[in-house]
Length: 311
Image (cartoon, rainbow, N blue to C red):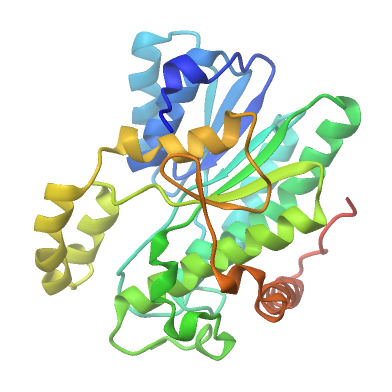
């Protein structure tokens, strides 16, 4: 399938969009591709406010009236997630598109502030809490505007196949040395969680189109992080391959842009570039899907979350 954002994304007038990690990589490319289609507003949620503000300034050079706001978000901290969601909910009167785009890979093993393996905390737990806190706004949008086309898109990866045993292992989630000296295993574990989370989210909320996507192997800053975090061997091993075979951030953004705007997107699916559904037995393993949902729900509740809203 060929997809051209400029040609294929329709008018987004009136739509409110939130994207995590919209300050860099495919997140930034996603923001830049959406702005020309006239959304009511775009909220960039990022840990680094300076780079997020730089994106806004760059976009406004070509689209001076672009309505883009920046919100502080550190996905490794539930406190930060709650603060971000509260700020958004107080500012916005609707939410049409939610891009769960931010992610990390190959960072030093440790626990998050809330006690979870750091990559799982950022790539899954933080996004799960953010989704839970923003869902009431999305559901309210549908109540007020029955024609609203609501989308949740999670940026996952085909690296989900690197999850040890092809499953979620909850015993590893609170272990700072999860999966030993295997950074790809930790990353794959969190990316599998993204897909299984979306499967259950789609089941629970049939009025919201929920998908997970693989952007492709992208030449982005996420791999530079490996070198900075002490995985120089991994960086030097993968960098030549990525530079030779990887795609640009603009290409990498296409699948999530397609998933958020195209008409023939099937909720609950995992898509690879561009718009091709990929299936795997684990996606249909109800023990895995329900087990992750139950674990996530219970852990969020331990930290004061009020639970999932009624559909």
